Length: 194
Image (tube, rainbow, N blue to C red; front, side):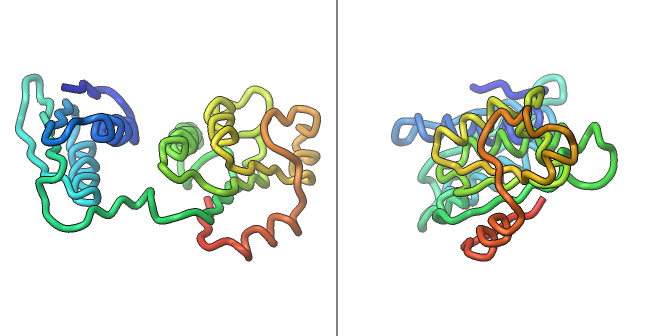
């Protein structure tokens, strides 16, 4: 059993995917979670990967989730395996609108989740305050390094780096310009804008 209580999204799903990859034929994967959102996310993972899904209440308000590989018939559809050509454009050092502290936690979690995809993005494009994520002191540098090692092209807008006084602090990837960003996005098969 994998205890992922207290772990933020997307850690329970990522740990489940790792366990499913390592599981022997017919071996069940059990995870202990502490909230219903994690249970729902694991149920979506099961549906998308062709696994059977069960859950039950556990001690201290926790939930025991069981994934059963191959229990469902039909082809498994893993959304991480839809092919390459993905471009992710990140225009802020925080994800979404609302509290900046939460937004910074979310963008860090999102970048980490990208490292766990079977097919990582082809390009990560950073502009506006998003360039802060690619410079010295960013808490996302380790995960961006992993993506770079997997072949993801990481580019930061030079005008944006200059505006924030960060040109000399670029720590991962290369400097680009808005024309190159526009060209990359226009030629992409899929673009995610954050």
